[in-house]
Image (cartoon, rainbow, N blue to C red; front, side, top):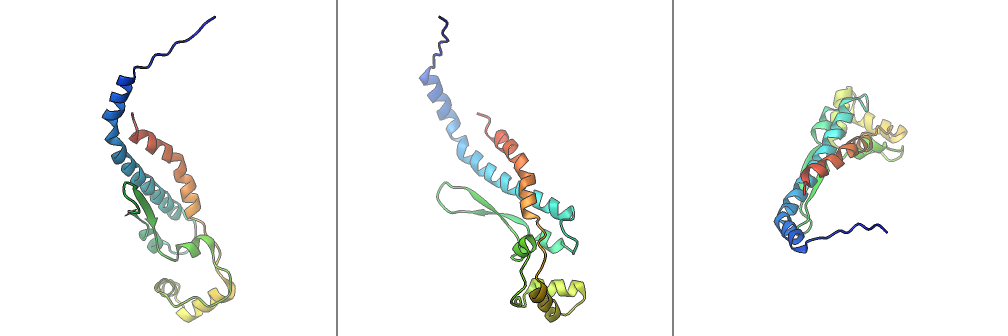
Length: 154
């Protein structure tokens, strides 16, 4: 009969864990921020690559990573962007006339049409979806494991 015997010196393990314990909060905060930054970077790269044809500089410039403090010892970071990003991502069904907001005024000015005409057209025909968030997240997911491995070298 053949047996493999594994002896573990608990004192050495506990000493190593205690030595490395202080690194966990800093590493988890760093990981949360780096993951959010990677998502933002990937979303911007999808926009730059031409996810949609109309001018997109303003939408790209609104993408930011900001900390969110929800609970003690929980490090959260969010990727923030313009409110109308969800309508670009998912599109809008025809129906009610959208409100007269700053993004619609800016878009109408760039397109050379009146705000009323643009709002009426959106209400009548809706808008087509131009996904850029989901493809950006999918693109970033390949790099997330590398970020975690880099920060937790125990």
